[in-house]
Amino acid sequence: MPVFVFRLYVAGEAQNSVLARANLRALCETYLPEQHQIEVLDVFREPKRALEDAIFMTPTLLKLAPASVRRIVGTLSQTEAVLLAIGLDDRVP
Image 1 (cartoon, rainbow, N blue to C red):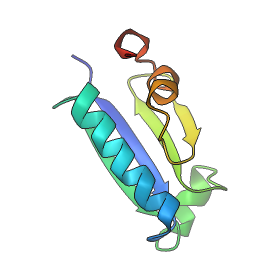
Image 2 (image 1 turned 180 degrees about the horizontal axis):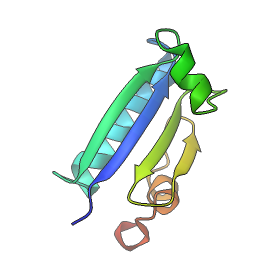
Image 3 (image 1 turned 90 degrees about the horizontal axis):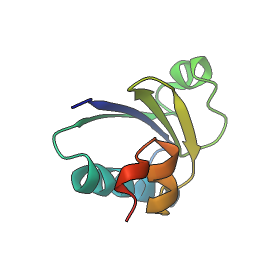
Image 4 (image 1 turned 180 degrees about the vertical axis):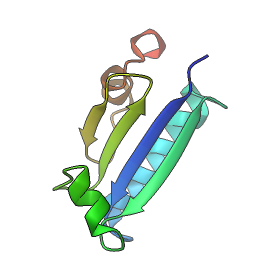
């Protein structure tokens, strides 16, 4: 079973950032139990990391592993679209 590695860039406690964190955790607990790692980075606290990853909007999710890096911008509230974007076509409800 591959482990999915995510990096979520947020802007402090902005409403969209809070929603994205909650939606990502719920998605991972539902569709990737014990098969995921999440790193949350605040662009205000780590602006250099955001620049290194070319983050210009928040929230932005990077799927780093398995292979084929993917980038999703937004609150991650559209579960089906997020599953498709990260390559979990077979788990779309």
